[in-house]
Amino acid sequence: MVPSYFAVFAALVFTFLVPGLIGYRFFDLKSYEIWAFVPIFSVLVSVGMIYYLSLALGYSHWTILVCFLILTSIYTALVYKKGEPLKPKSLPKLAQIKKGTLLLFGAVFLISLAVLCFSVWRGNDYGIVMTGSNWQDTPFHYEIIESLNQGNFPPQTPNYIGTPLTYHYFVDFHTAIVEKTYGFLPTLLPVLNAVFIGIFAVAVYALARFYSRRAAIIAVVLGVFGWGLSYVGLFSALFSGTFNPYQNYIYQFGDLFGLPSIFDNLLQQRPLLMGLPVFALVLALLRDMSNQNRLLLAGILTGLVFSFHNVAFFCCYMAFAAAVILNMRKLNFGWLYFLVPSVFALPFIFAGGPAISVSFSAAFIVDFAHNPLIYYFLNLGIPFILALVSFIKPGHEYLKLTLLALFLIPNILLLTPWVWDMYKFFMFAWIPIVVLSGIVLSKLRFKGSRVVVLVLVLLSIITSASVIIYNVNTEFTAVSWSEYQLGMWVRDNTPENSVFLTHYSIQCPPSIIAGRLRVSSYVYWPYGHGEPLSEVQAREKMIDEAYTGSESQLAAAVREYSVDYVYVGRDEQRNYAGCAERFDRVDWLTRVYSEDGLYIYQVNTIKMET
Image (tube, rainbow, N blue to C red; front, side, top):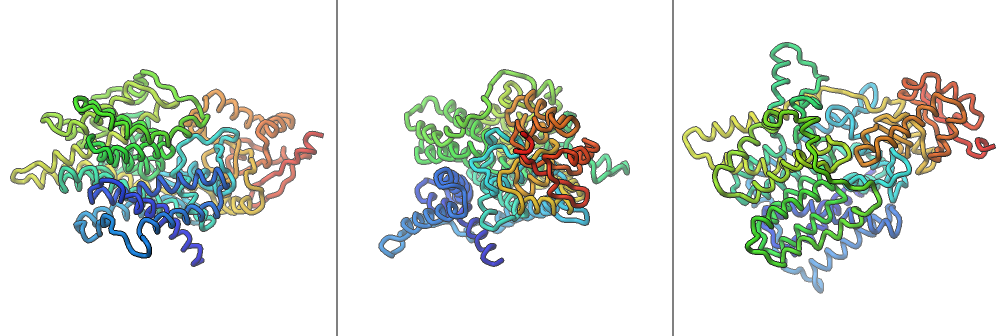
């Protein structure tokens, strides 16, 4: 096992450090910005590099190794000249960072890691737990990761067969790359999520440190753990004796406290784990529009982030637009340095996915906010109020204008297939909100001001207590041990890229564990990624008919989606009573797996057609 874990360690070094250690020498960065730049730039470059090499050579261990060797050669050529070390700008040492700041970053990482290890891929007596914030979307990310490492490259959507994977999946691709050096390592995901949350904290610090260290510390605490007043529900339940650990007190979808907190999102929304740090660093770089070197770097980061999070790409352009507006009198062609690197995003923008639509719409207000004045103050809480207070006095107009733009967009525009997904703009607006809040609180100078600041910060982060309680106390089973064994059997005994007919459920062992493809899944996954709702529902109807209808209807689904195997698990038996008995009577289906009431049937296409 030692060589395998060594390979994982090497992959972490090459994907989180090496490209950044090469690149920081070429850009005009402040010391506290370098610590954010190195891991952010490294992930963007290493994953992009492996992606393009894989298009040419195929995605494999050897392609990853070739990429690592190329990066090693570049690093060696840069650091050594004729056997002697060059004298580049020295990388800031940990000793130069105050202990309090390091402790804060460490606390962010450890708290996140503890919560994630309790809630993602933890075994108990019944099976594998994926619970709390991660019960719904995390299985989707596992399907992407495992399907990539089981031959699905260039990827089609693993749980909506026949469509290209246009979803911003590169954070999952990064996890797949690290995992591929080992084999099957599902416990890697929660660890990497915690690392990315730590990187986000460092990026927020890099943005806010320009104003003061005190402002930066406050901004980091609020940026990771702050939010609104939804903890009212938690305390109400505690004081009334009605507390239920399985009740989600974080937010209530479509209700008054309807925006999920930032920490809740960081735990589960994997694309945000790169989108938010990149946006924070780009905000810091665009602060000086006269520095073409920093503009170029901001443009590179923006161009590379599209495949990680397309909303982050759009938000970076909003920040650039705000900077241009505020510097209009100093207009110069050097600003084009930001625009040119967007060429990195073009292959993904024109990748052939669903068309991007933009329309004026108040749908988010109508469907979710209802009363915006109350809704946003309750959900965004004290940091939002403090950010608005900062508007009273002049200064920091760049952050203020960016905040206004990102706040208004979901209220007046519709850019996503599903209206609800517009809420993600509030996650990006949260960054200027917490920085402005940190600036306001750091400037309080009166007797007792420290107590006031402490109280306001505590009142802003209590919602994260709800997040932690919900994630640690719940135990939603993703797959039972029997389903886990089935998934491992599928992984070992079926060809890569095999297509499974299953119920359109969230948890599906052949996909989560084995990385096999399936016909359809939870409706809001394909619909949220741009597939027309009518087509998603038509596919669901065909699946229903395949499990409950005639043999010819089953054959029609098998032909339509080139199905190799039919799965009968818990969800299938619950939704299609007696389906296993019906399949036993179909002579072109062969039962190849039967354990603990779980069944897999292999399709004999030749026999079916005759």
